[in-house]
Image (cartoon, rainbow over all chains, first blue to last red; front, side, top):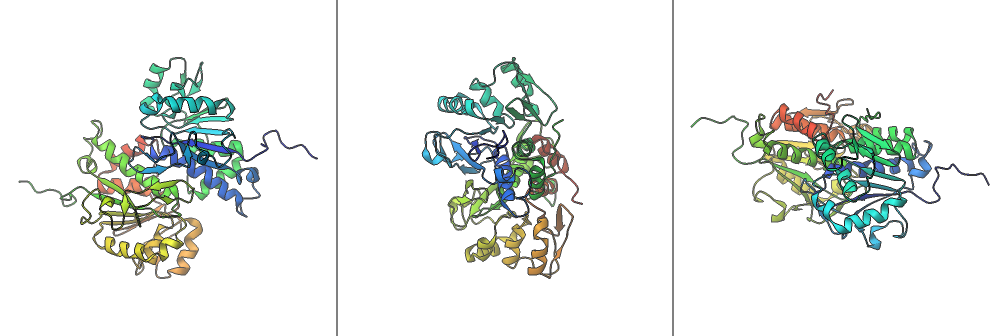
Length: 227
Length: 227
């Protein structure tokens, strides 16, 4: 039996997005649109031949909130997640399956940063995740949970660079790149930059060709270079 | 008493977004993010001096579905609207107040096109609307309701140009522009083009300066020219 590539997981990748009251709507829905569109395109006849398409077609994208109830985004629109932290409904895959890609959107993060259940959930989920990603001020939630130790290279929304440097002086907070990759940590600039980061993740997890095809399906002019 | 500009409405503008099962998530949430961010920026000290900011700060953005219940987007994520077609909860403004801007997102539109309640609601709402806007295949829902009579100039998702021409041969379906304005009818290309159309609407309804400030707040590289 031929060996499979070392990047081929033995089960479908699980991509988990955190929803919370005050979440910036597009920080959450931009990545959700990217990952689900990539998976849909990969399953189509005109996408199935692209490198990585067989993997992407199986991606399981789920949104979770603390208690599985609806959250009110900063825009006012409410979103109903697939489940809560401790809820079997939260998992398209069994709840014992760790998440592979954990993405934290930004927004008004004070309550989420201070929430013990959110911190505990992040500390349970993060160790096994292949990728920890944060859009905009989602990185504040990761940092508040203690997940950004050491001189990690990160970025965030332009208005939040200074507060981030003040609160976590150990971080190398970069001003300029649309997104920053530091080992398994992926962080992006503000709001819509989460779409570009997510397309870059599609390129990383499946292939650049699938990312480009996904951007075209979304009629999105992908900024495919972070700097 | 000085006369006000003819573009100044006597009450806050109401922007109504339609949600339905199968709606493309970003078609709905992109415009919602743009309009609410513009309104929020306009109310901030650094935005209040921009032309049109006083108007935009009062915008009422609401999402409605047929029965006010949650809808499942094509991406899987469920969205809870502010109310239903006949529901007082639907209206941030009183339900007798007509919508000023009616925006129809695209997606898997077959059921929405065929829904008598949706058609009837569109026919009630559309006559008084200052702007009828559609993202991607949202224009199919408007056309199916009989609201795109005559040789109107429109566009849609690249994959849907040919089906649109076949179904509504009276339309001038344009291939290329990111969005098209024909009198009060605004239509855009696919998915993310709805963000550009919405920013163009902010420029039209408030000012280009507020649209540019909104795009910057969203870290979005606005394509401010449609061609």
